[in-house]
Image (cartoon, rainbow, N blue to C red):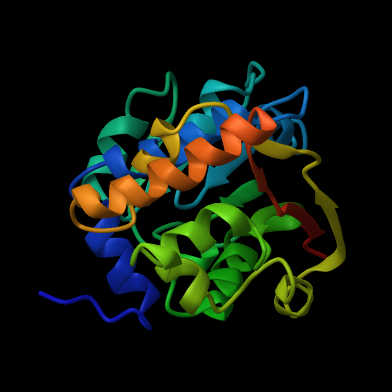
Length: 256
């Protein structure tokens, strides 16, 4: 069945419901990060580590594999995908709930912190999800929201466009780092943002092949892969790396 590229929830369902492999292929690009910290460690440093913490759309739970959770902290992880929830159950001490973001199965004012790490562009209504985050947060609780800018992975996704593997997320995202402030400020106060420094400098071709292959239902064709290998291989031969810009932003905000 063809997936409507204008519908983020249908795209997410097709990509993530039955497997975590596509997400793993995309996360592998982080291996080539030039910053002294990886994304998950850097983002984890910006999450308050006390009380009741909820991560919505937690994926494989990588944030909590790279982040120390202090004694007495209670961690709840959710995802709409059964495959992702299977991965989340491997996180020691975490409570796991299978649910979407726009109708959370928690009572009002349950959590001290709500985390949404690169997931809001998957939902039908960012407003509905943010309203739920506000509802389940305790007074003076903190929302931590990560989003990408429109130029994130420009060189990589531009190559994808060239070989017929466009980024559905970039083409239909309703909330991005550029417009997030206006969305978040409807529900929270003291909205602050910080951009993750550095770039990705990829030293071999295969991670790019795997990433672009993960954007479709099947891997790249031989013809598509040949184009990717030619372009990336030439860049590596010329510059030593295939350099890809990143635009990853953490927003923090407070519930009054």
